[in-house]
Image 1 (cartoon, each protein chain N blue to C red):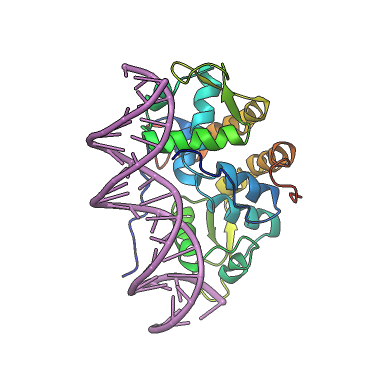
Image 2: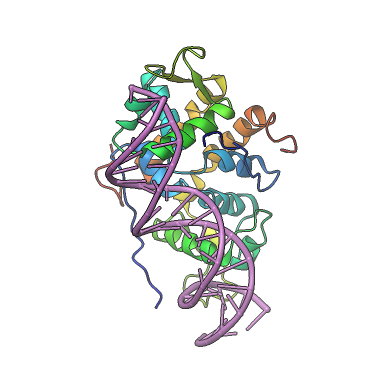
Length: 117
Length: 117
DNA sequence: CCGCATCCGTTACGATACTG
DNA sequence: CAGTATCGTAACGGATGCGG
Protein backbone atom coordinates (compact mmCIF):
# COMPACT_ATOMS: atom_id res chain seq x y z
CA UNK A 1 0.00 0.00 0.00
CA UNK A 2 0.92 3.61 -0.42
CA UNK A 3 -0.22 6.40 1.94
CA UNK A 4 1.87 6.45 5.05
CA UNK A 5 0.93 8.67 7.93
CA UNK A 6 3.27 11.61 7.49
CA UNK A 7 3.53 12.66 11.10
CA UNK A 8 6.52 14.04 12.92
CA UNK A 9 7.56 13.02 16.40
CA UNK A 10 8.39 16.29 18.11
CA UNK A 11 11.00 15.64 20.76
CA UNK A 12 10.50 18.87 22.69
CA UNK A 13 9.08 22.37 22.44
CA UNK A 14 12.49 23.85 21.57
CA UNK A 15 12.36 25.46 18.12
CA UNK A 16 15.87 24.27 17.23
CA UNK A 17 14.98 20.74 18.19
CA UNK A 18 11.76 21.03 16.19
CA UNK A 19 13.61 22.26 13.12
CA UNK A 20 15.90 19.25 13.41
CA UNK A 21 12.94 16.92 13.85
CA UNK A 22 12.07 17.91 10.28
CA UNK A 23 15.38 18.79 8.64
CA UNK A 24 17.83 16.79 10.77
CA UNK A 25 18.90 14.18 8.26
CA UNK A 26 21.35 13.92 5.43
CA UNK A 27 18.88 14.42 2.58
CA UNK A 28 16.05 16.89 3.23
CA UNK A 29 18.17 20.03 3.07
CA UNK A 30 19.95 18.66 0.01
CA UNK A 31 16.63 18.44 -1.83
CA UNK A 32 15.86 22.00 -0.78
CA UNK A 33 19.31 23.02 -2.00
CA UNK A 34 18.65 21.54 -5.45
CA UNK A 35 15.31 23.28 -5.74
CA UNK A 36 16.76 26.61 -4.61
CA UNK A 37 19.75 26.40 -6.94
CA UNK A 38 18.04 25.14 -10.07
CA UNK A 39 14.41 26.09 -9.69
CA UNK A 40 11.71 23.47 -10.28
CA UNK A 41 13.08 19.95 -10.69
CA UNK A 42 11.55 16.61 -11.54
CA UNK A 43 11.94 13.39 -9.60
CA UNK A 44 14.58 12.06 -11.97
CA UNK A 45 16.50 15.33 -11.99
CA UNK A 46 16.67 15.18 -8.19
CA UNK A 47 17.86 11.59 -8.43
CA UNK A 48 20.71 12.73 -10.67
CA UNK A 49 22.32 14.95 -8.04
CA UNK A 50 25.92 14.02 -7.30
CA UNK A 51 25.18 12.66 -3.81
CA UNK A 52 23.08 9.79 -5.26
CA UNK A 53 19.98 9.54 -3.13
CA UNK A 54 18.07 6.29 -3.63
CA UNK A 55 14.56 6.21 -5.04
CA UNK A 56 12.68 5.15 -1.92
CA UNK A 57 14.41 7.73 0.27
CA UNK A 58 13.74 10.49 -2.24
CA UNK A 59 10.07 9.54 -2.45
CA UNK A 60 9.63 9.49 1.32
CA UNK A 61 11.39 12.83 1.78
CA UNK A 62 9.37 14.47 -0.98
CA UNK A 63 6.25 13.19 0.71
CA UNK A 64 7.21 14.61 4.10
CA UNK A 65 8.40 17.96 2.73
CA UNK A 66 5.19 18.27 0.76
CA UNK A 67 3.09 17.47 3.83
CA UNK A 68 4.95 20.19 5.74
CA UNK A 69 4.47 22.60 2.82
CA UNK A 70 8.14 23.29 2.29
CA UNK A 71 7.80 22.11 -1.31
CA UNK A 72 4.91 21.62 -3.73
CA UNK A 73 4.10 20.41 -7.23
CA UNK A 74 4.44 22.93 -10.01
CA UNK A 75 1.18 21.63 -11.52
CA UNK A 76 -0.84 20.13 -8.68
CA UNK A 77 -3.66 18.74 -10.82
CA UNK A 78 -1.52 17.33 -13.60
CA UNK A 79 -0.22 13.78 -13.75
CA UNK A 80 2.97 12.86 -11.93
CA UNK A 81 4.89 12.42 -15.16
CA UNK A 82 7.03 15.47 -15.95
CA UNK A 83 5.48 17.23 -12.98
CA UNK A 84 8.22 19.05 -11.11
CA UNK A 85 8.67 20.11 -7.49
CA UNK A 86 9.44 23.62 -6.31
CA UNK A 87 9.96 25.28 -2.95
CA UNK A 88 7.15 27.14 -1.24
CA UNK A 89 7.73 30.32 0.72
CA UNK A 90 8.50 28.20 3.79
CA UNK A 91 11.12 26.28 1.86
CA UNK A 92 12.61 29.40 0.30
CA UNK A 93 13.02 30.87 3.78
CA UNK A 94 15.71 28.26 4.39
CA UNK A 95 18.04 29.86 1.84
CA UNK A 96 20.04 31.94 4.35
CA UNK A 97 20.55 28.85 6.48
CA UNK A 98 21.91 26.88 3.54
CA UNK A 99 24.16 29.79 2.62
CA UNK A 100 25.38 29.88 6.21
CA UNK A 101 26.13 26.17 6.19
CA UNK A 102 28.09 26.54 2.95
CA UNK A 103 30.23 29.36 4.30
CA UNK A 104 30.74 27.51 7.57
CA UNK A 105 31.83 24.33 5.82
CA UNK A 106 34.28 26.18 3.61
CA UNK A 107 35.85 27.82 6.65
CA UNK A 108 35.86 24.95 9.12
CA UNK A 109 35.82 21.65 7.26
CA UNK A 110 38.59 22.13 4.74
CA UNK A 111 41.19 20.57 7.02
CA UNK A 112 39.20 17.34 6.92
CA UNK A 113 37.93 17.48 3.34
CA UNK A 114 40.50 19.07 1.08
CA UNK A 115 38.40 18.89 -2.09
CA UNK A 116 35.57 21.04 -0.73
CA UNK A 117 34.59 23.74 -3.23
CA UNK B 1 38.16 -1.98 22.42
CA UNK B 2 37.70 1.74 22.25
CA UNK B 3 39.09 4.01 19.53
CA UNK B 4 37.16 3.71 16.33
CA UNK B 5 38.37 5.48 13.25
CA UNK B 6 36.40 8.70 13.28
CA UNK B 7 36.28 9.32 9.56
CA UNK B 8 33.56 11.00 7.54
CA UNK B 9 32.30 9.76 4.20
CA UNK B 10 32.11 12.89 2.08
CA UNK B 11 29.39 12.45 -0.50
CA UNK B 12 30.48 15.25 -2.81
CA UNK B 13 32.58 18.43 -2.98
CA UNK B 14 29.53 20.63 -2.34
CA UNK B 15 30.01 22.60 0.89
CA UNK B 16 26.35 22.24 1.87
CA UNK B 17 26.51 18.52 1.36
CA UNK B 18 29.74 18.41 3.35
CA UNK B 19 28.21 20.36 6.21
CA UNK B 20 25.37 17.84 6.27
CA UNK B 21 27.81 14.93 6.17
CA UNK B 22 28.90 16.18 9.59
CA UNK B 23 25.84 17.88 11.07
CA UNK B 24 23.04 16.15 9.17
CA UNK B 25 21.52 14.13 11.97
CA UNK B 26 19.10 14.74 14.80
CA UNK B 27 21.67 15.08 17.59
CA UNK B 28 24.90 16.86 16.67
CA UNK B 29 23.44 20.34 16.41
CA UNK B 30 21.45 19.74 19.58
CA UNK B 31 24.68 19.10 21.49
CA UNK B 32 26.14 22.29 20.03
CA UNK B 33 22.95 24.10 21.06
CA UNK B 34 23.34 22.96 24.67
CA UNK B 35 26.98 24.04 24.79
CA UNK B 36 26.19 27.40 23.23
CA UNK B 37 23.25 28.10 25.53
CA UNK B 38 24.69 26.90 28.82
CA UNK B 39 28.43 27.08 28.37
CA UNK B 40 30.57 24.08 29.34
CA UNK B 41 28.55 20.96 30.16
CA UNK B 42 29.42 17.52 31.42
CA UNK B 43 28.38 14.23 29.87
CA UNK B 44 25.57 13.72 32.34
CA UNK B 45 24.30 17.28 31.95
CA UNK B 46 24.07 16.71 28.20
CA UNK B 47 22.21 13.47 28.86
CA UNK B 48 19.67 15.40 30.91
CA UNK B 49 18.50 17.57 28.01
CA UNK B 50 14.76 17.28 27.34
CA UNK B 51 15.21 15.39 24.06
CA UNK B 52 16.72 12.36 25.85
CA UNK B 53 19.69 11.24 23.83
CA UNK B 54 20.94 7.78 24.75
CA UNK B 55 24.36 7.18 26.24
CA UNK B 56 25.99 5.40 23.32
CA UNK B 57 24.79 7.96 20.78
CA UNK B 58 25.99 10.84 22.94
CA UNK B 59 29.41 9.25 23.32
CA UNK B 60 29.81 8.64 19.60
CA UNK B 61 28.70 12.18 18.71
CA UNK B 62 31.04 13.73 21.27
CA UNK B 63 33.82 11.67 19.79
CA UNK B 64 33.11 12.80 16.23
CA UNK B 65 32.61 16.46 17.15
CA UNK B 66 35.85 16.39 19.11
CA UNK B 67 37.70 14.82 16.19
CA UNK B 68 36.38 17.59 13.92
CA UNK B 69 37.36 20.20 16.52
CA UNK B 70 33.89 21.65 16.94
CA UNK B 71 34.06 20.89 20.65
CA UNK B 72 36.82 20.16 23.16
CA UNK B 73 37.41 19.26 26.80
CA UNK B 74 37.58 22.12 29.24
CA UNK B 75 40.55 20.41 30.97
CA UNK B 76 42.22 18.22 28.36
CA UNK B 77 44.74 16.64 30.71
CA UNK B 78 42.39 15.97 33.58
CA UNK B 79 40.44 12.77 34.10
CA UNK B 80 37.13 12.26 32.32
CA UNK B 81 35.17 12.54 35.53
CA UNK B 82 33.56 15.98 35.89
CA UNK B 83 35.48 17.13 32.83
CA UNK B 84 33.12 19.19 30.73
CA UNK B 85 32.86 19.88 27.02
CA UNK B 86 32.79 23.30 25.40
CA UNK B 87 32.57 24.59 21.84
CA UNK B 88 35.68 25.63 19.96
CA UNK B 89 35.73 28.59 17.60
CA UNK B 90 34.49 26.29 14.81
CA UNK B 91 31.58 25.20 16.93
CA UNK B 92 30.76 28.71 18.06
CA UNK B 93 30.61 29.78 14.41
CA UNK B 94 27.44 27.70 14.11
CA UNK B 95 25.52 30.02 16.40
CA UNK B 96 23.93 32.14 13.63
CA UNK B 97 22.81 28.96 11.89
CA UNK B 98 21.11 27.67 15.04
CA UNK B 99 19.50 31.07 15.56
CA UNK B 100 18.27 30.97 11.98
CA UNK B 101 16.81 27.50 12.46
CA UNK B 102 15.00 28.65 15.59
CA UNK B 103 13.45 31.65 13.88
CA UNK B 104 12.53 29.56 10.86
CA UNK B 105 10.86 26.89 12.98
CA UNK B 106 8.85 29.45 14.91
CA UNK B 107 7.59 30.97 11.68
CA UNK B 108 6.98 27.87 9.57
CA UNK B 109 6.40 24.90 11.85
CA UNK B 110 3.82 26.23 14.25
CA UNK B 111 0.91 24.94 12.16
CA UNK B 112 2.23 21.42 12.68
CA UNK B 113 3.56 21.76 16.22
CA UNK B 114 1.41 24.08 18.26
CA UNK B 115 3.47 23.89 21.43
CA UNK B 116 6.63 25.24 19.86
CA UNK B 117 8.16 27.98 22.02
C1' DC C 1 29.03 7.57 41.51
C1' DC C 2 30.44 9.38 36.47
C1' DG C 3 31.77 8.49 31.86
C1' DC C 4 31.56 5.79 28.82
C1' DA C 5 31.52 0.66 26.15
C1' DT C 6 28.95 -3.45 25.08
C1' DC C 7 25.01 -6.12 24.04
C1' DC C 8 20.87 -6.62 21.53
C1' DG C 9 16.17 -5.72 19.74
C1' DT C 10 14.12 -2.35 16.65
C1' DT C 11 14.05 1.03 13.20
C1' DA C 12 15.91 3.54 9.23
C1' DC C 13 18.61 3.45 5.29
C1' DG C 14 20.39 1.93 0.60
C1' DA C 15 20.58 -0.76 -3.69
C1' DT C 16 17.99 -2.91 -6.85
C1' DA C 17 13.97 -4.99 -9.12
C1' DC C 18 9.56 -4.08 -10.37
C1' DT C 19 4.83 -1.70 -11.64
C1' DG C 20 1.34 1.76 -13.62
C1' DC D 1 9.03 8.66 -15.74
C1' DA D 2 7.57 8.43 -11.04
C1' DG D 3 7.36 6.06 -7.85
C1' DT D 4 6.62 1.13 -4.76
C1' DA D 5 8.14 -3.58 -2.87
C1' DT D 6 11.64 -6.20 -1.15
C1' DC D 7 15.45 -7.32 1.47
C1' DG D 8 20.17 -6.96 3.32
C1' DT D 9 22.83 -3.72 6.09
C1' DA D 10 23.81 0.05 9.18
C1' DA D 11 22.29 3.20 12.68
C1' DC D 12 19.63 3.94 16.62
C1' DG D 13 17.80 3.34 21.48
C1' DG D 14 17.48 1.31 25.95
C1' DA D 15 19.52 -1.58 29.43
C1' DT D 16 23.33 -2.87 31.61
C1' DG D 17 28.24 -3.53 32.90
C1' DC D 18 32.60 -1.83 34.24
C1' DG D 19 36.73 0.91 35.11
C1' DG D 20 38.53 4.99 37.45
